[in-house]
Length: 393
View 1: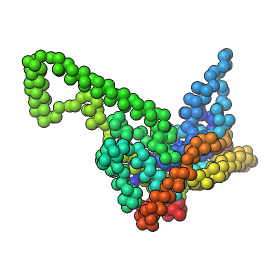
View 2: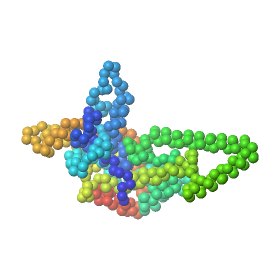
View 3: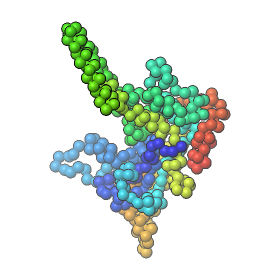
């Protein structure tokens, strides 16, 4: 299945060098963040822009001093910037060198669990089946036969709760069973605020409509009749002008013009295979470490990633300072010059894992009820991930 959303690729930047031009040094870490695994970015350092903004909020300037010098809010830990903004003019050769010199990290969940989680998350973001019977999610057995059909159902019948507000999500996904976003999408508080604003807009629209009807009732019948005839004549002229239909105005018109496909695209991004983002032109795996996101292994794997990255930076610093250094050692020295430590935010991880054990039990229950046929069908859908990433057992 082709990628419906671009791969979210982030490159590391040492905390002290956030304000510098990132193009002047090679990143230590390249982080490939799938739409379903946004937590990976948060747990390994987060966005540099958000770290700067948060540090300024939490640490006001001291009187008579500067803005805190080069120290950052995370004790020298790495943060991340989007690849496209950090290296907007990078050539294919430079990107290849970056992939060779940096530690490329991603998360690859078991494809069966990932499919069940996407099924639960997509349905949880839809309007209730009681209010919209067409928005009752497909049974899991039907979903296993064709996962894309679930996203198409939501797009066709405008099932997403975001459609009520006339807008969809701006990319990014969330982990842990919610529809909120990580760094690339709405978080839970922002989503609640958006829904509240949408309700307030609809309430005002209804009030204006009621006020307009009340004014019509207060008018004399003759005046109201003349106004209706004038409106009908004007409508006829507008509709006959070069075959152009009259333009709807107000909240209803805005909703009609809203991009209804956007929530469906987001839903599709939760379903698409991960291997296209993690393989090179040769089709071989282009990642150094794949984190297992299940609750039993994720902390162990993240600590191993941090140790791998920090050991590599110390080794690069040692090799770059030796005599007779060549081009490779020079690149290592350039990397080590702005090196920072990769730290695991275990508090953020604990927040992500809250309730994960129970949710994984629910995912397994879906397969217990569906049987081996569902396993076979979803394994066929994610055959490339199983072959390349080895995450199908």
